[in-house]
Image 1 (spheres, rainbow, N blue to C red):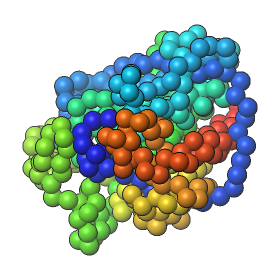
Image 2: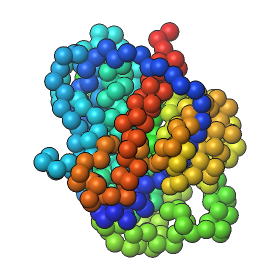
Image 3: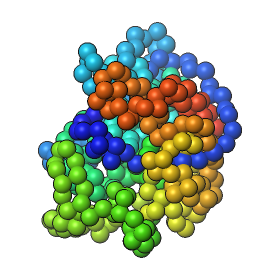
Length: 367
């Protein structure tokens, strides 16, 4: 995590939904972790160091007796967050081709923040590829374009799938006919766009006329990495930026994705429109009932009304930040507002893992 508490809070978006308790398959593997870098053409537009690649964390089935260690965020001696456990570079254990899950973190978050879920899926036999979105993640310097070019995050997922399928080590281990996606908060919106949701810019204009509180509406945005910038100027600063802006309402449907999970999804004002009615893939939406960062009635509920195959799970008493890693003592001091409702976070993780695993066991089952 980087930047002051106020900034971190401003950078986290979300959404919501309701349903039934399910029981996940019993884990049969350990969890391994590998970090790869794949080419991502155009990523340099958002990346602070202008690199045309993206970092992808891969969690995968390893032997059940591997020695796993905590996945931490922050200093080793005083971590801010603890997010699952995995064994670095452990040998791959599954003998047949496995389903792939591509994962998108929240605004300003990181792949590591979602390790509690990714490692659990790996223990159930899934290969999970979690993207660090260029210019908009908690490990690298953030940039204004990383914040504003939200549609590029969906393309990050497409390129992550391309990269891992083409990887000589990972590609042969994956069944390309069984690919799912998970997105948390802003990542939920990224997954929706990759399923074919198309932004309605006129609806956003009407929404912003009523309120400038949303990150997509305010005339200026502020971040500890780059200070305060004017939105309009940033989106006009170069021909390359203008070319990207011209594509924001394009159809980005990736037919390789067969099922998706949205966890507290964001951007209802932009994406909750009739384009969702053409999404035919099964979608599971998880939402905490106490989430007021992006309320359910403005986000998840509106998505669920329009998605033909949506199922919803409402987690009672759960707030937006409960889907982050477990807070360490350092986070409670430095990022206190992210940890105020930390008491039920372990239960939230277990409930989420059970629901998500059961959903993918059903929707990505081997033929």
